[in-house]
Length: 366
Image (cartoon, rainbow, N blue to C red; front, side):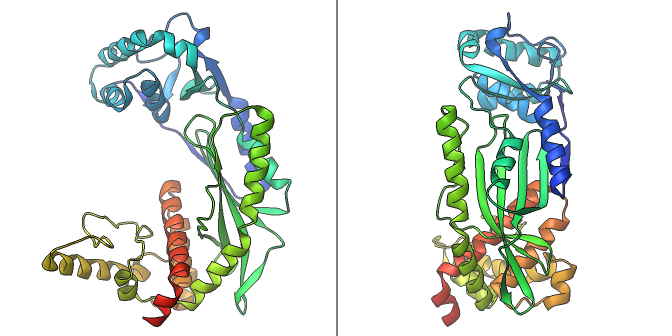
């Protein structure tokens, strides 16, 4: 059994009012407790810390700060006796007591009395409510989707006045993906995507021009300036997003060409480097032939496996272009109900579009 931890609930919002209610409730529930305020750093025999339980990420962060890293976390989870697991962690806490009290603070969900993270005393708290409000102040946006787990937020916003057509009757809007976490598990992060009205999904298109993120550190005034610059720099990439999307419409979806040219395959949910062809890797001819055939089959089957009803109505199992395949992938991702899988597929689809835009001449000539 080890140290018990609670499963974290995932919350979703699909409009501005429900999004703001969701993140404001989270703001009210989260508090920071410096370890220097505590007399003794010690888990009780039931695996709790001053009566507070742990989330999975909270336990992972706590054991890391205690000095045991991944090994201590593994022991905390796998030792059958809870009291024994607590004693093992207490040994780490005793050894690193002064450092922890001097440098660390707990992130606690006060509503459930659960430790959800552990961060430095220099950590700059910039809440999800603050981040969303700051972006909303730069334009007129609609909320496509908001997902919150513990304090890990992922929001898609679409600019109302940014519509443009990739084909007659097929309108795209510019969108901005926001990610933030205030329990030590992520930075403020922005990314672009295009929102296809015809499919009502958020197809991710990664521009990869800038590292659009900010770590939760720094003086308040300087940090706020970084947030303003982050949002502005992201919006300046809209024209790149538009151009890459238009290019992807012109490039046919040909599985054998994609594999031969070394296309990224992270957009395939069941892709694995160990099984399929790794672009640029040196194989013996027989091994390469086997992996090549297997990879081609997987890419050829993708339009049948990873799609949705709107994509099926539009082009069935034969996507006309890279853009249409990426759109089908995004629709499939949206229908899965798994936030992490959805993010993986959408970002993979964006990588495919960005890669195709950079290889336009070779792909059109093939």
